[in-house]
Length: 420
Ligand SMILES: *Cc1c(COP(=O)(O)O)cnc(C)c1O
Image (tube, rainbow, N blue to C red; front, side):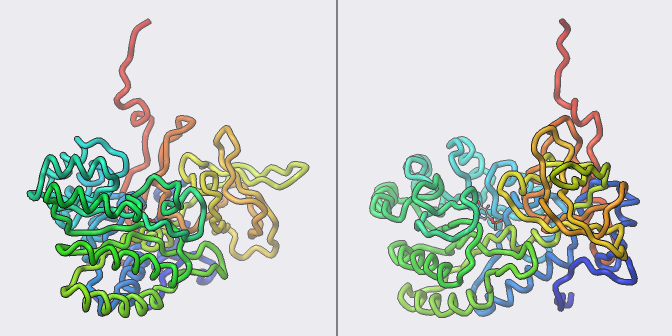
């Protein structure tokens, strides 16, 4: 397969919005709104860009399932050559079901029970341990019979929303780098085979130098662990949400990392693989969420556009204050644009975007929310007893249904009926 040459995106051609040449209104017509649509070429482009940026390094991608977990997406990543990062035993099982080998899957749970870790060990995946009591228990149970990876917290501040900051001093994630001595003691006394080190500082690191600072801390710790096969740098690459957003320059990161890695291997005496777990970077921009307009409601303060969806389907704006571009794809040739506030139908404050300039919106128009690939469907719920939307993947110029829209029966599934 030839590499994707340019960033695939929504294009306006002859008055129609297209994804891989397919008219998005036709897709909405066929599968109904609200609807998640993903562009496979975009995923492949991002993956290939990253591999190019890290050319010359023994780099491996472990795609984080939690960002977008449709099994077809997982299979697509398998075909691209990625492995998986998983945070629950269910994600491990999804990955195995999608055809990944256990060795291709890393399990990075946080505050799970030791039983869940044992279950993951029995499935044969790579275990990443994120606290000292668990490390001790792991050592007592398995000694040197099962290798493991250790998650450190270097306490670096990466930027971004505080809910997605996981490297700060108050964070519950990882073992503090200041506890390294303690870790060493437990490893030694239990003969634990540490084959990997892991760090995941947070979600939005803009500066290649901050990234490198984290990497160098890991290289320093690595010198204390002679049996390493990989160092996992987690995620942290920023993606653009609106025009002009600054993003992480992966090619700059790659260049600096090559230097630091060359130095490290010289001291360390052997090669280790470098793993990366970019979720948003790989799948945020591939996704588009289409919602139909129910009502246009002028109030004393704003003109609200009410759509047939809400935070139950896409929670990032309300949960993280995330900015997502909104676009009226039904009226591209409108002579007027107006300022709207786009809101959902959930019975609490439920805003997709304040004060957005859009081509004139009419009832029945389709609004497209961009950057909907990551943490969209996977964070959706049945709140207000609403049904989850369908998912469509555009692959080889064709729109394919990859998850059906929920039905009323799905709401009742598993509920028992008592008689009163
Ligand atoms: C959430 C998570 C990721 C992915 O983060 P993004 O911000 O989507 O890139 C990677 N690794 C671990 C351990 C995570 O918890």
